[in-house]
Image (cartoon, rainbow, N blue to C red):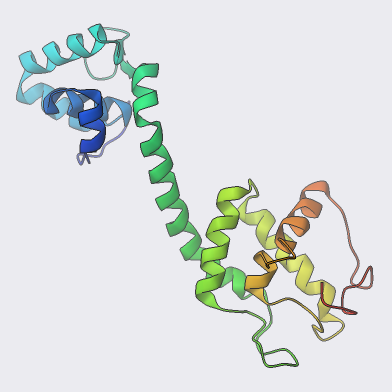
Length: 207
């Protein structure tokens, strides 16, 4: 364990589900999060209760004591992993939303400024882009770099034809009855496919 954090957030729903006393559940949570600093604080605060809790959690198959160090030589077992797996998904979802919010405007800027022939902005609606991008990232395994490269490729295909018929940014991510053009472009990036601006129907009809 190498975490230097001293904060801990307890999920009381999981605590009730585990049927553990709050002291034992706190230790289990810290072991799961590999928060060695907070575990050391608890151990120094009440060494006897800390040791008793470790042995109880091991007896109940929540953790495994692997050595002599009561902080570093402790790890969770599958029973604990199963308990916390939904919490992992929630945390990952929150982190993902925050991360995307930090770069979605940069991504929109790949599209040109201005509007198309009927007055719709190429960069689309910011909120719709964020909402659709969050959904896209959750349902695909493409990296941020692949998403940016795919989008850049798409925009460049239309640049020589003054962006005629190019999709707005939020529709590029996903459009009803069309699907995700972004996904198709990302797939081509991953496969190393090179598409010239004059190929296919780009700039000739709405895709």
